Image (cartoon, rainbow, N blue to C red; front, side, top):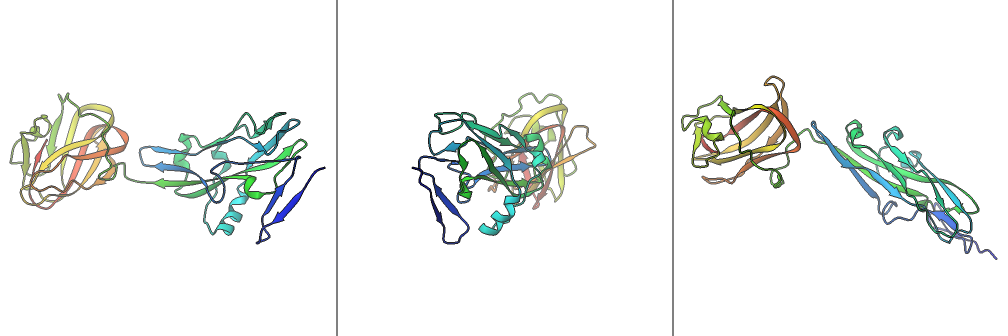
Length: 311
């Protein structure tokens, strides 16, 4: 005897099935349902892209199958509009061409309750920069089942949902206070040269790059002065800049960091706020989100009158 029970929810839009010893095929993951969405993210900057959009799961049956069953999946963007309406959301859709799809057909073999393989849908890193900022939803739908079992009629068990947040940040500088400890200071500074467009009557600029924190250079600076550091050659994998500063009256308001490989074409990496110090400050570090290749580093300061800078 085969038992079938169908129960309608109170809004008449959802169905739940219990098929007794016949069974059904369905998706059952801890995340990926409307109440607990799987999450992905993309973080784009002018220099690089990072993130993770990666979906992987098997298909399941609620009984041991007595013969092989094959399940077919697809990305179905038509489900995004209905999801938005039902859950009062505002997700966009992603072009299916941006995805790499693997093993979209899964087989549950005789005597098993889930497929040995897992479906795999992901966006490769080289595609991240093509995605506009916004919030997106990826619905991976169990489209049909071949074999003696049927797919569940419970819609939340037929679709795996991933919400993807895509952010574009024009700054390549980590927020102040989140610089981390990666990287080491360069010790070989032969060939380096520092210039400045402002007053530096308190010690030569070479003191800024000699590695001696007892030497200094400074002056009566006004706003929008800059230091230009020539490294003598192009370096790759530059993680940031490191400066110690002391101020007699006021201090830096902001520092804009730009780099160049030839001294002509410049990349603006953004602006950071220096540490707030009284007379002597901790190190001010401008740490890049993505490593930089450059020969020239320009630091443009906005300051409040007078500072002496240590290095």
